[in-house]
Length: 80
Image 1 (cartoon, helix red, strand yellow):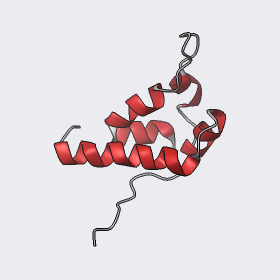
Image 2 (image 1 turned 90 degrees about the vertical axis):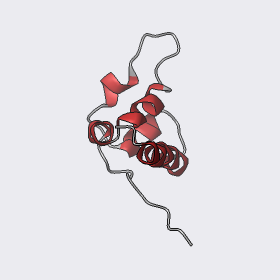
Image 3 (image 1 turned 180 degrees about the horizontal axis):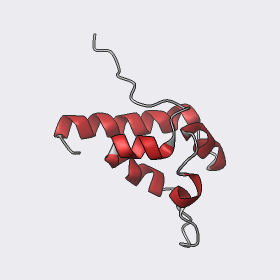
């Protein structure tokens, strides 16, 4: 049985997550204001993942799973 690797958690700071796992930036950018008036990363870059999820009304566990899935894919393809 293969164990699921946890890459990030709710207390990780967004800028650190993106610096370590560049592919996660695209997930965070999905929550930019659709009208283009607000860059969510500009406003939350130095906050924990948990605060970001709360501000965007996201299920924290599901959001972290999505980020970790992107990281796992990034690692398997060798994408920096």
